[in-house]
Image (tube, rainbow, N blue to C red; front, side, top):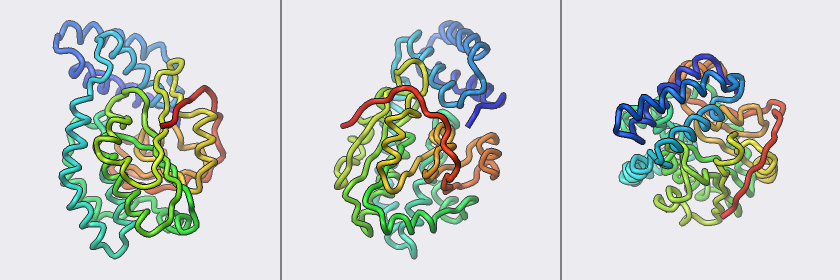
Length: 299
């Protein structure tokens, strides 16, 4: 998905939130913010928003010397949802359709996006999502494909949200024999995106048949999570799920992916033909976009 003018304004707000975490000195915040604005004037605006965001994040963390401004918030987010985990499991277990409920809860977790939203109420979001229909609903196709699948690939999005993803995978495993489950996380920090340490903290590696792969967020100043290696992962799995708005922005033109997200801005809502706040479970059947660059990593 290409960026729009609105995305540049969003980038400025996002940069300010990062700066306030990375530096307490207002003079430093202003100095770095000016550099961010200069970069945003020069950057190619027709690229995807995530690539623009990565460049902004790299600039701020390099100048401030704080490589992971969201580290404490990520840990807190994981802990907050882990405390809710027994309750979330009950929602799934007592549901008429456990997999559908797990999918809805996985979408609820997508609200935990400090890049797009500064404040959110996860408990309130859970209740809203459980009583709201998907605006785009390809659940039946996902359910049917899982019946014949032996492998699942999940692109994780944010810390905290990954706990909901664990519940989704756990629910799949209870009714489907899945010899191979691969979860893709970021190798290095970017915003509050899930990293290996988050997967370990929430016990994701305790699920059976789990492999963690990672994309290196420090390749050539670009978004390397859209590359030939990642394309190979997609082709090698029976079911592919991409969580969240950022993964949608990068991978929306790639066929064969189920996107689970909340449309948190008007641009993504328009791109999906929905409205802001819509719950989306969308299967991509479009032609693949060009895929280039390098990626790396397996654990």
